[in-house]
Every structure is written in structure tokens, then in C-alpha cells.
Length: 312
Image 1 (cartoon, rainbow, N blue to C red):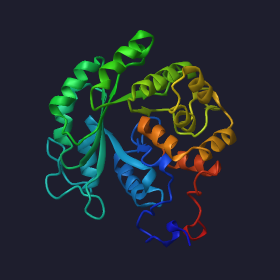
Image 2 (spheres, helix red, strand yellow):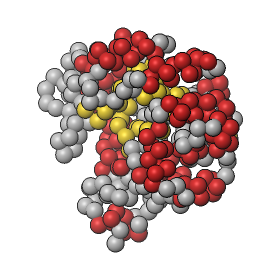
Image 3 (spheres, rainbow, N blue to C red):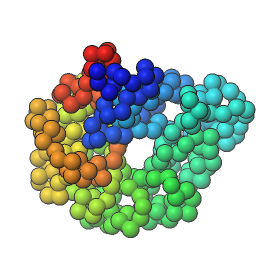
Image 4 (cartoon, rainbow, N blue to C red):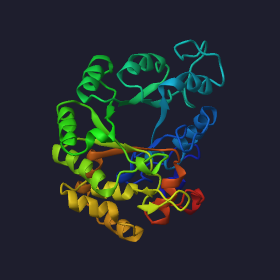
């Protein structure tokens, strides 16, 4: 009997998820293109956190403007105060643990203080701050962020091209904060090509700078979306490219479209390579948790999410 099948039915199994995928999938269910209502996203997230694959799932991501909705949903629809806290009762997950939330702040540093106050009922697992000035963001985070809360700083892609990339990453080197890079969106222009993404990945690798990605990485392997025609990067491609310091080599990995080739490369990774990769590429936001897991199962890298416990 496997570790997954011997665990209690309502407890996540340990050891079912390889280290390469631990905490990789931040739950961005309420963001486009998924746009799941907050009231539905909370119980869905609870389900993920209780499932055998829980080790792969990061926090529930929430924008600053929806923390009141989130508090009401977690508290079962109770009224909330102006700060987003429930008027009475708590907002604990099943079992008494607070809901782990990642704050996504597209409005920049001005949102940071109010969002942290509104998120007081939750366990803040991280902050993602979108700004145009990296130094200003570092100063705001240094001033307002609790020391045990990680943060990632996202700058517009146009500022991360050419010499601008190195200048921005150099600002972050001496800070405790990660970089954040947008790998997709709802229009074709939101998707960087292999060369642009490779420049970011290798720029971070050469500086020992960790990062997270967001948008467009729901699938394991690079592909063209048949409905939109958008070119999507694969998260396995990004994982494998994260260990590269040569831009051309990273771009070649990002361009690979054969899932069997990528799966073989994953199986060949040493423990040291896995550590290097995950110290670099820490997580990505996905509006579907099932989709990336199903892709990994199809490639033989995980058990099937639909397979009964006793068969795994």
C-alpha cells in the first residue's frame, strides 16, 4: 500500500509529490481566465489543501480589492468590517488553521499597508507587488512588510528588456525579495517569446536571484493554444531552463515541444539540480490546479488525480 493510500482520507499524503513540484502551484482561481467566484474558490482551495497532492499547492492568491469578499467567504458569509475582517467569529480553515493567502497588489506600493491590514485575519504567505520602480518597491516592503513574509516584485516587461533587465535585477540582489515575471495573459502580446523569457531566467540565475512567474503556465509543455492561437510556455520547460546560465541554452529548453523529451530530462535530474531549480523558480500562479497535475500525470511524473486512492 502506498503512502497516499495509507493516509487518512481527509489528510494530505506526504511523499506523494516529488520535491521538484513542492509548492509550485499557487492557487490563482479567482484571476483571469478562470475567474472563479471567491465564494467557490475558498471551498475548492480547501479541497486542494486536503488532497493527496496538497504538497504541490501554494497559497490562495487574492487581489487587494477582494479581501473583504474572501473574509466573508471563509467565515461562511458573515458580515465584514471596513478592514475586511469578519464582524464576529474567525476565518480559520477546517482544522483551525488560518487560510494561507498570497496578496496580489497590482496598484503598487500604495496598496501595501491597507492590504496587510485587511489581511490580518489570514496567514499572509506572501506579497506580490507590481510597480514601475524597483528601488521604491524595496523601500516600501522594507518599511511595511513583516520580516517573516516573503515578497515578489513585478515590473512591466518593457522595463526588463535590454539594459533595463540587468539594472532592475541588480536592485533586487541585495534585498530579500524575489523577482516576478509575467509569462502570459489574455492577449497574444502578453506572452514573451523564448528569447525574452530566457534573458530573464538567466539574468536571475547569474545573480542567484529567486523568482516566480504568473499567467499562461497552466500546461506542462510549450504549445500553441488551439482556441486562441497564443503561444504558451510550459512550466516544465521553465523548470528545466531555470538551471541554465547560458541564454541560448535556456531558450532551446523553453522551445521544446515534446513532452516525452521533457519528462525524460526531469527523471534524469539529480537532487542537487532539483535544489538549484527550485531555489530559482519558486512558484507560479495558475487558475487551475487540476490542469497542471493532469499534465504531469499524463507524462508519468505524478499519479493520476482521478485515480482512486487504493489504486495509487
